[in-house]
Structures are given as C-alpha cells and as structure tokens.
Image (cartoon, rainbow, N blue to C red; front, side):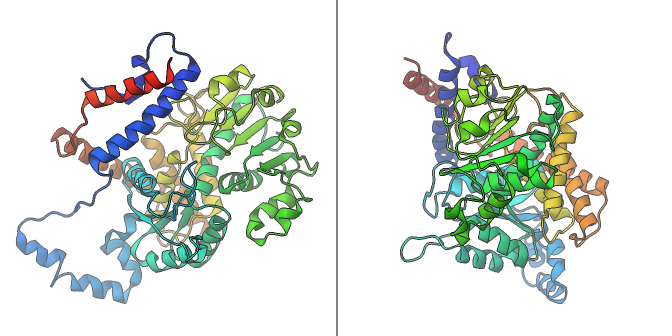
Amino acid sequence: MKISLENIEQLFPEGISEEEKAKVKTLFFKEMAIQMHEFYKGKIQVLPKAGLYGFNWFNVWYTPGVSSVSTAIRDQQDRSFDLSNRGNLVAVVSDSTRVLGDGDCGPSGGLGVMEGKAYLMKYLAGVDGIALCVDNRDENKKPSPDKIIDFVKMLQPSVGAVNLEDISQPDCYKVLDVLRRDCEIPVWHDDAQGTACVILAGLINALILAEKKMEDVKIVLFGAGASNTTVAKLLLLSGANPDNIVLFDSKGGLHKNRKDIKDSPKFYIKWELCQKTNPQCFNHIEDAMKGADVLISLSQPGPDTVKKDWVKSMNEKAIVFTCANPVPEIYPYAAKEAGAFIVATGRGDFPNQVNNSLGFPGILKGALLCKARQITDGMAIRAAESLAEFARQRDFHADKILPTMDELEVFAQVAADVAMQAVKEGVARTKVCFDQVYNTTLYDIKQTRKTIDLMMDNDIIKEPSADIIQDILNKVIKQVVR
C-alpha cells in the first residue's frame, strides 16, 4: 500500500478538530523528516551528466584531453560557464546560525535545509546545487560575517551563483551587501530576498482581489529580521506609502525615536526603515493593527503569536500573511474566524503557500542562463510580478493567490522574465531572448523529473515502506488526539 502525503488527512480519525489536524501534520512531517533522512542518508548525490562509451573516454573527460579545457579557460575566464558545470551550479552557503525557527544549530546543523534547497533547485528549475555549511566561529564560538564573505569570494570561480541561507541578523545584512557589491556572480539571500519576492507577489494579487491599491493600504509588518526588512524595502520600491508602513521587532515599533537601533551600526538596515516608516511612532502592535489592511508576519512560530483580537481590529477585507515555519503565527482557520479575507502561510498543506520555493529556483535559473553578474532589486520585483501574473492566468481566487509548486511552467516563466530584466538593466553577460530561456528551463525541468522517475521506477531510489509511514502517523495521532 502506498500513502500519498498529499492525502494524509484522509487517514485521520473522525471528529478530529482543525487545531488537532494542524498539530498532527506538523509533528508527522517532523518525524517523517528524521526517519526519511536516515533512510536515504540525506537527499542529494553527485552523478555524471556525460556518457562513458568505453574507458578511452576518460582521456576526454580527464587527462590528457582535459588540459585543453584548462587552457581555454585560462585564455578566457568566462568560458568556464560553458566548459564546466559552473554555468548551472549554485552554492548554497550557510553558517547555520538561524536555521528555520530553531536558531543556531552549529556549523553542520543546516545541512538538511541546504540539501533541501539544492533538491528544490534541481526538481523545480533543473539547477544543480551544492550544500556548503561553513564554520565561521571564532575562539569564543562567535560567528564572524567576514569569514563567510572571504569564503564566498574564494568560492566564486567554481559556481555560477551563490544562495545565502540561514545566517542570523545582523550578520546577514553585511554579508549580502558586501558580496553583492564585490562579487562577479549573483549572490542571493533567499531568506531575505526570496521570501520578500514571493510575499510581494502574493500581496499584489491579494490587493487585486480585495480591490485595494498598494499606495493606499496600511501595512503592519510583525518581525523585523532579514525577511521582513527586505519585504519593507521591496514594498517601498513597489509603490507602498512609507507613512502607512509600521514594522515591529521584539522591542516594539521601528521609528525615528528608537535610539537603541540608531546607536548600533550593525542594524543600519533597520535604522534606515526607522527613518522612513511609522511617522506616528507606534510602539504597540495592538494600536497599529487597528484599521490595518495588511499584516505580514515573519516572527516567532505560533500558533498564538498573532492574536485573534488583532485580526478582528483590522479593516474590512483584511489580508493576513503569517509565514513563520514550521507553525504559522496564527492558523488560517483562526484568522478566518477573526474576519480575515485572505490568509496565507509558508506551508504547502494550507491554502496560499507564500514560500520562497516558488521564487528562487526560477530566479536563479534566469540569472544563470543569461550569466548575470548580480540579481538586482529590479530583477526581484520583476520575478514577483511574473509570479502574480502567472497566478491570474490560472485558477485565481482568495484561496489561490499564487501558483503552486506543481505548476512547472511558472518556473520557466519566472526564469525568462528575470533574464529579460537582467538584459534590460545591463547586468547580463549574454543577451538572450525570452523563448530561449523559457524553453531551456522547461527542458531542464522535464529532464530532471524524467531522471528521478526513471531511478524510482528501477528501484535505484528505493521507496520507503508504507508501514513505516503508517506507524509514524499512528504514533503522532496518539500524542495529539486524546
């Protein structure tokens, strides 16, 4: 018997509440993750993509023939993108200091997430990724942003792009800004830019359904880490009124009187937002939420971090994005009960998944195919618009404001739109056309999936026993349902 994880709720006992269902699914996926990662010993491997038609072919793939590849690259460094896998290879780099909602997990603690990123890149956009967790701690076990910066600078001749991940603030700001300035390849911080890009896409469509305009709505951002500060930046670039934006961190509202932020040079991004937003100097989120049109929460995992009373005090047709993982700050059913019109979370088992996995595969693929030197804010905004446009051409309603990961064409469209924006802004090494990028991306996605299907069909990738999955589910149900 095979169990589809898409239909897992069919196996729940009758009479289980919505809150219990949410708890069961969360615990089930966590326990499954441990069991399945141990079963497969991780989830990424390295395989050749060139054929071996006899052992003399090693004279082509290695010495003596390969020396001509070295000299060709010596004479023209950019040929490395075409004569090696560099042109389709992304390094997923982390120091594991802020892994999902679990904080500092030690230098190796982020490997599961980084391999997951690499898996998504390959399956969703045909991009090869390599997980690289860096020990950047000093003798006092304190992480050093400069060590990550040096590492990536030394690494860049081997890859076409770098995806930064799970680096704690404020180090993440410095790491990204310095590397974007100094590197000759795109450096992308997915927790910040990727999340912000997909949230912007979701908000564009949510506002259309709510019949509201970006420049008019009052927006509260709960949480002021790397993700939400970047969300605020993209919102401002997309026409949101800074007077209508309020951000909150763990100490209260961000505003011009926050001396603690002003006096800490490491938080320069937050200080910029203090000066631009919240002219009313709201200190308490309960006050700011009254009459708000939009809540974007990237804070502590819930389910009671965001209160139902806050949502009740919002404007009509309120839009609530609660994107903490693995548990949203308020469950969708609770936000709807409180009067929310559109609710989105970071999880795929609820409607409206606002997750960076919708964005970064296509964005990176587009940047790679045009050999971009960087991913600009304009490219990120164009990716958000592309996602929103794709969703509006499909089944578009309050519970479907964004594409889903199984709509493979969306990644090809985002890749092509991003590449066109890179060409337009002059950051592409190679001028490409929309159809070229779209068709190449779609072909690479299909080839990847064909390869994985072939390996599963021939038992090269072994399927876990359905009994194991059922046992895990039964165990979790007993823990939750009394």
